Image (cartoon, rainbow, N blue to C red; front, top):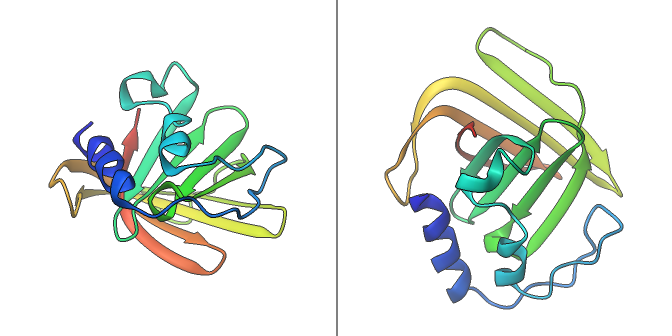
Length: 146
């Protein structure tokens, strides 16, 4: 929860959202605050269908992996929202889970490993380390099942 509050605080200080077309047919959020509001809170994520949430800093990002059908990535302090079809996970090695997906010219690979992780901004402990590769850009963070 502290990490989400931190992301919200950072979002309030960030510039206005870009007009980049998201990887779905939905319209891009008008502001960072609107984009963050579309993501369920930690408390509501399970009920919304989220199975795993990953977060990272510099720039701030959140990725929700839904149990049924999609992956939603909120990047660059909420300025960019991309949605991908939810593929079946692979297990490249013991204790590791990877999802790879593509939509509308964007590519995503997210791998999480069972290894302790500490959020760089809040200091909150998580049970998984996360590597997110989005359109060739690598971001690192932490995550957990919700």
